Image: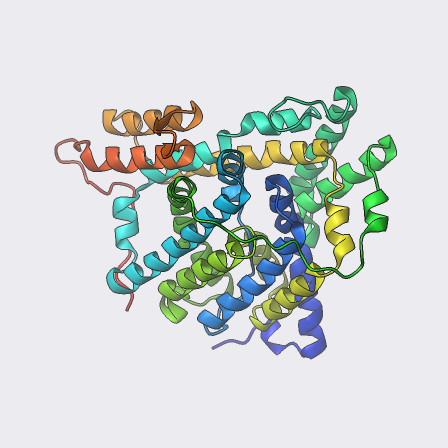
Length: 426
């Protein structure tokens, strides 16, 4: 077995590499809570603790870093508007429990059942709805308004200058950047937009100077609400399937088969426990970060101990009060410009899911499923009563699964066309 450069590093190098990994993850890690109304210091804390939990469950064998999942941005915003943050956290905790249950089924049945029940024709359009459902929010924020467009927070001409500058710089770094710079386009875009906002005089540093250097993060306790739970659980389906791809990706980078050892059931369990633990204190759901996987590939630093140090730095940074307050001074237009790219990117991931699986949209069955999922999810349909209802991503995911189960396949058609069925892994 070959030994990587990262596995040969000494103590000081491990610490520095851990700080570098946190730097790579930092932009996306704190952006997600800022967009959803959560405390970025809590997100730092739960990212660090979640990564440590993942390492404990997987025997510290997989060099990944867990942090805020972008797939939940739109659902968290909608859920918070309807049922409040505490109820939303309860739904996120339940989503983590779903991961845990999936890990048990994977242990018993292997991964094939995921692809049978949730083929690309189901998962693809649901992911597209996650990205496109709140496209108006991104546009409103880019124009300097609140997410619902009700209040103009920044003059529109100034807002458009800042938002499009942030977006353009992010795009340039993402497409033309080299080395570590290419891995942090969101951070570069946000910093550039922030500097421009300071130049326009729309940033207020008063709260930063008043904030304490050391302070407890603003932990929040979840509450149980069936509406929020049943709304959020279907949202977790797509990230759960994406988890499989993330584990395969880091395995390709390191040359190891993590599906077999420590086992996909253990990595899924680690992700689920980390997500539920985060929700219990007010943090966003966790997922493995592709930015950090890219950094691992670039630096050849494969030693999982590096992620231990990254996690410890994240936890330590969470207790520096001025960090969270400074992050909260980032103006709306900066966020809006980045959100336009992020929401669109999520939608493209869904579209790419259909393309890679070669889903034939000329077939009436596939066309019906995708069409109804998109219209149901983006159109704002809601079913139920005042005390209980389903809408948005949750409703369209249910529609997709049901249609996939009841609509007949064409005669002679492979029921799992375009789906890779993996053998059971004991």
